[in-house]
Length: 475
Image 1 (cartoon, one colour):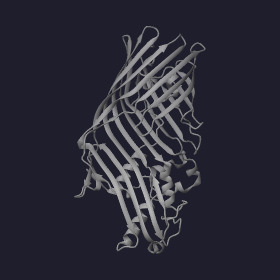
Image 2 (cartoon, rainbow, N blue to C red):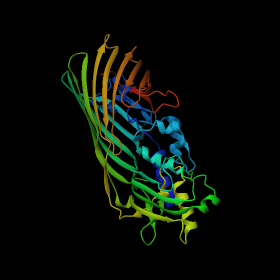
Image 3 (cartoon, rainbow, N blue to C red):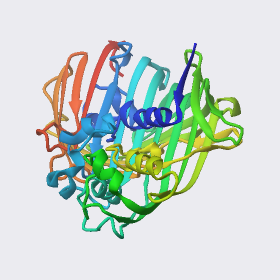
Image 4 (tube, rainbow, N blue to C red):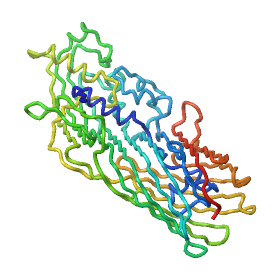
């Protein structure tokens, strides 16, 4: 089966994939609130040295399902508008939206789920095996991208007589892969515990879209100084005279099974073709390393490095397109009517990824290698009340191709017994003061969030569900 898309629609589809398969990450491939909870195996996703006291079998698909969405500036109220990437969108025209923006606006999302996972104590150590699906989406949209869009809708101090609009662009990346891992944890004496996990990676997709520059200059007459090009009438359009230029530099790199460009004789992209029903486009490997050390009976320090690895993507599954677009629109020449229509179509759109501004030219496909998003984890915990109460602090720093995110979480956990526990956390760096987290352990079921939802102005939200069947006796 083959599907084809025109250049505009295909780029919009890639953009929608970047923004819509999932948005925005709050590092939700793991949950911080459960890090200090007793009797849960999910903490091994943050540190392979933290083995549970019993073996387990996770319920497929629900054994450890994590998802999170976040932005450093944009509230969830506008999330659906941005994800839709619609040409008729007008959310960016509101003062509420533009006033919340920063110079760099991060939009992130990640998702992870265990398709199968099992762990057991054997000899002096703890073994665990997993098959997981992971997805990361990162985007960084500069404020001037939205200012550019507002200007096209008549919301600019610049007049179309001598407008000079510029944006340094945006970048977005999506990465999806399957992971098959084998981990081992072993105590060394009464104080030190070391853990490691070796993982084989099976690449599903990696797509990167980057806009380096968009510049528009106009010298137009017989038009309102702040004309909205999305509402201009045909009669008004035909009266416009003068010239305008648009310059754009952009690049798209992508790897996915069955993905290819269809080009004209000059290698300009006519459409993107996707054949087949899917498959693997790359292979790689990674390792997780962790350690925990008891300074005393009740005080423990821990550290880990996660996802030290790479994926190599095959040449046959990779596309690469570059745009260096410089177009002049002459509203007085022989083709004035055509140029007026094309100019209006190009700038009236409400799309963040407005591919009418680009003219991609296919480059030679080459195999490529991408790094995983490595995470550094540091933790400290102290036990009280005969080990029923645990308080701790957790620092996580995740390195991304588009965005790097750090978080500092304070948490407390109270265990009523081996089957029931509750945790409360506060994450202070990414939440704009709303980083309250909550976790519950009720027998085999664990529910947790690092960022609770507090209405439409919430910028960060996450959730985790885990269902595990315990195996064996306590170690």
